[in-house]
Every structure is written in structure tokens, then in C-alpha cells.
Length: 333
Image (cartoon, rainbow, N blue to C red; front, side):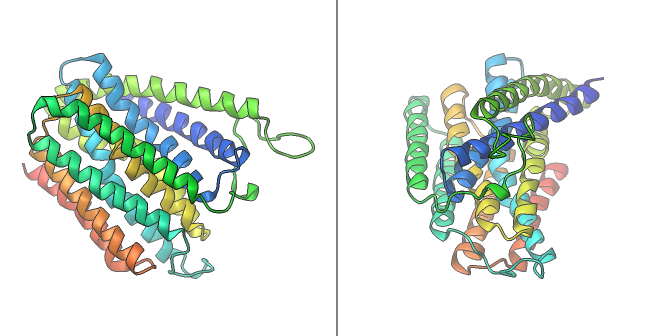
């Protein structure tokens, strides 16, 4: 029964994330935001919400082992984004290179990519260093600094958001697929309602996920931290990042990569700030290895995408190998 409920929580979280992301893209269109901002901010934050709310719910619940779940979810998400999610995008580019107008060349806002990856590498590395062992008095000021850093990032991204997302690239609003009779656009009220409904489903699913994850970990005799490092981000981040697979196939590199790199920035700042403020933030060897491999994935992305300007096969294999190395390390422990 706990396993069934755990699977059910996945379904609820992902359904909520799908509704939220669909609505938030329409909101970005209505607000006149460019593709860079929609990908790196709205879509990225929307798809990062499930993984972010899991540690929030775990911290609020305060159950035994909940802090391990929170830390595992916080560290595991950036690691997965910098490895498997990047590998998924690269694989799509190679599979559909003949379909893509630009082939394997990268057509995206390189300034935004450089900023995203730079923010991620700096702040995720700082979060790792703080988790090795710092005085507790430093944690709250550091948490505030992480939040401020993300606010600065948002402002910078909005300044260079690029061209406004074309309406043809948007899927119909799930709760109002027909839209206005004249314009075809859904009314703002329907968009806001779907955002609220999607967020509610994510919160409810996250609460159920934390409860059942602790139950399953206890019944299997597995450390809750290890299970949350592997299972939580894989279940909540990867399915939504499948959007990037299809965006790359269509040659929409700004949306595809912005969705992932923007989420990397968000996950390496806001959730880490929550961990610093509300947990002991004492990373064990599994969380530490996960963070180091995630940073390695970010470096590979910077080299392969930012400096070469195209998708590289060696990078795809490296991203996959980094994730596989972590699984081997955990299973062999």
C-alpha cells in the first residue's frame, strides 16, 4: 500500500506541474515576456516547484527522518538537472539533427546560458562548502544572501529576455482549450485559476510523497537521504524536463535549455536557502558526492554549450556517466 500511495503522489505532483507549467507559459505570453525569461524563469520555476515543495513539506512536517528527505531533495535536483536532464537534451539534438533547421548548432541566447550556468556553478559550490561544516550562526545570513542572489538573477534575465514567445509555440490551456472566440487566447481568469489548481495539486502531492517516502524507506531499511537523493528528483524533475526533449527536436533551443539551466539556478539558490535556514545543513558523503558530480555536469555544460556553440556527443556520454557513477557509488556503499 505505501508503494501504491507513493506512485499516486508522483502522479498528483506531475499532473499539478503539467497544469502549472502550461498556465505559466500562457501568463508569460500575456505579460509580454521573451522566450529567454519564459524558459529560464517561468517554465523553470514552474517545473522546479514539485522538487522545491518536497523539502518544504518535509521541514514543516518535522517527522523523524524528514530532514534527510529535505536535504536529499534539495541536493538531488540540481545534480539530476546537470546530468540526466542535459543528457536528454543532447540526445534529442542528435536524434533529430536532420529535422532541426540548425542541425547540431546551438541557436539560443548565449548570454542567458552563460549567466545561468555561471550562477549555478558559483552558488551550488558555495552550498556544498557550507554543508561541509560551518558555524550555525553563518547559516541564516548565507540563506538571505542566496535569496538575494536569485533576485539579482531574475532582474538580469528580464533585461535580456529576448523575443516574445510566439503563440503558436504554446499548447492550449488545459482548463480552457477553446479560448476566446475571437482571439483564441484563454482569458486571464482561466490562466490564474489553472495556476492555483496546479499549485494546490503539487502541494498535496508533495505532502503525500514525504509521508510515503519515509514509510517505504523504513520498510526497506534504506536511508531516507539516499532514497530522496535518487528517487525524488528523478520522479519530479525528469518527466517535466521531457518538454525540453521536444523543444530541442523542434529547434527551440532557448526554451529547451532555458527550462533546464534556469531550474538549475533556482534549485541551487532558493531550496539551498531553505536548507540553510531550516535544517542543520550537514551534508553527508552521499549528498557531498551528488553535489560534486552535479558541479562537474555544470562544467561540462559550460564547455560544450557555451564555448563550442553546439551539441557534442562526448558531453552527452559524460552527463550520463556522471549520473551512473553516483548510482554505482550508492549501490556499492
